[in-house]
Length: 68
Image (cartoon, rainbow, N blue to C red; front, side, top):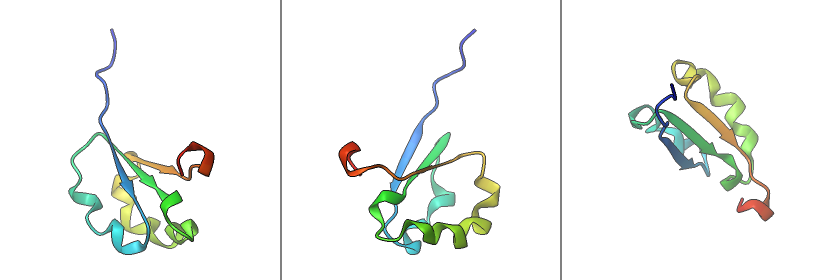
């Protein structure tokens, strides 16, 4: 038996403010596209705010050759 497909919402994150509506996203998984930010490591200071979503989050920093 196959699992049902998962819906992934991709959120381009340029600055911390872009995370303000993350809890309102209704999808199975949420991809945080940190490659849009000039300093993607700011996310480290924000992680505690989203502990309830930890099983839904995918963190992505794509190379420029991969569309990042």
